Length: 264
Image 1: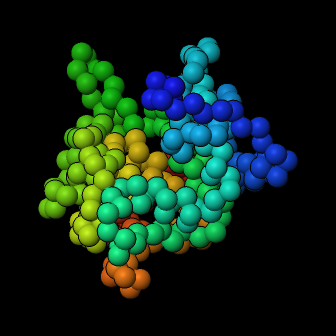
Image 2: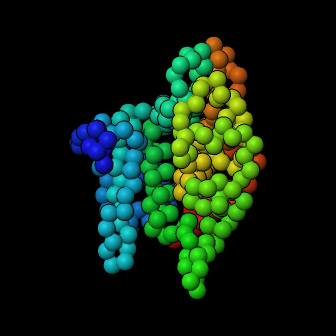
């Protein structure tokens, strides 16, 4: 896939210190993640020169059990969550106006902590089919979790059902057909995001990314006691700040995440 795009990632062999970072990240996962990943995560790998942060793939089915592989960009092992999240967020905006600065304040934990939570949620989602459309009597019907999670928010996997007042939000680069936006639009985009139940711009990509982002940022802020703030500055002066977990529409969805903390 990467070579087709003209990119040639190479396998990264972990150093002893990097191995310790990875082990620590796995140890910090909540119980359901550890339980499901032990059953369904067949392998992981790290690449240098990988364009995206990570890729979770269903690679094989053994005895009707889906098994997954997660590929990580090795560079995240040497970034904090704040550094990595800022880098990713800035990719949503063009670089033609340097008077604006967009950053994410998300603490000093290693970025692999966030990325593993996010990708691990994809493994859970796929393994236990949290978001799933069942076929009943020849017609499609979402399961109970999908119905509760998507009601009024998603019409389908990437069709947003929530009424978004500022259409600029829906043209962010994570949306189908989206492009990087002028940085001068950043405060308007995040104000618009604050009127929705989406915890991040990336959460608008699909209902699967919405779930992974919602859980990860909730767990990061609530259980790992880290901040998550979007800061927009112009000429070094802060002009807008957004803390998604303080958004009532986002907070209302926290109750849907209780299943991730159920004992085995």
